[in-house]
Length: 335
Figure 1: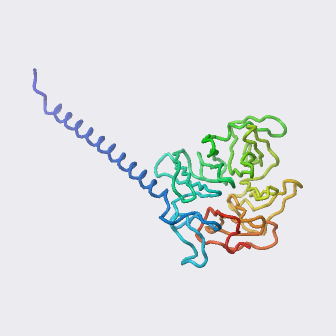
Figure 2 (figure 1 turned 30 degrees about the vertical axis):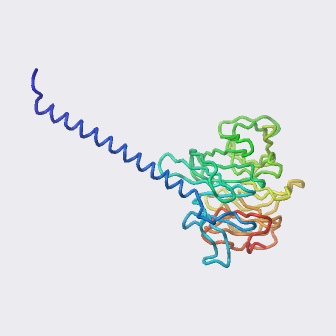
Figure 3 (figure 1 turned 180 degrees about the vertical axis):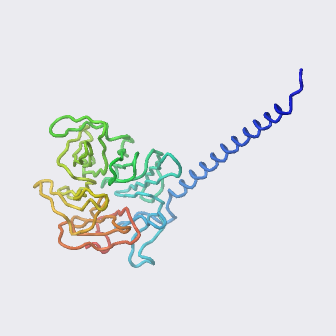
């Protein structure tokens, strides 16, 4: 047997070194991923004593990412202490928190929280958080993720919208599975995208946006019948009024990339629509704070405007987004 040459010995040494580096890198990556998962877990819980109170306006503080309770009498106009979320909504005894995870490809946590803002369910799903909604009863949850792109103003994007029934635990992973009727006929197309779900009081009927062939449509859906039908064009991010008679939505009024939408209200029975008195672009799913008033994110803050178009908007909370109202009272300063 011949002794190994100097070259072969050096080669074996470098192979061992490379293997150790690869193993070390894998261990480091695992450690970083585990640390980020721990950070996400801790961020998904609120501070002790921070809960959903009877009647209050909550919003995401854009500086910290944490959910805060808006209180004009508190320092800075808000009480911090909620979970870190990119999108947040709450109703009944349930809160929904969407939080993007670090890394590529994009993935996010869907956190279901109770009234004490304690985590009761967690899912890790692909995509970037876009919209979050909880039905008035707290039983039905819907969320939308960007799976391609990160803005509705871009020409190329794709979304995935999911619905979770907390009563049964049944999860609709992608609403594109629901049979769609468009123009009176069953419609099939590979470019169908859903987003911006809003539930009716019965937890069965819902409204949402469907995009296909370069157009957006307002659809009315029926969970029990497992069906959806298009009602009209150019309606995005519908929000059903508390009495179920009107829909607030964003309407595309220009083809430019900047501020292409304005906030409108649609009468379901009469079919008429009118703009609210917000002159600037709104890219948000508006919230009905009561039967007469809308709240929405715009320009880095949360604003309020009468739904009938009778008065100009007013700022409710600077450096905030994702407004949510608990209880039956209107938001502070909204009326």
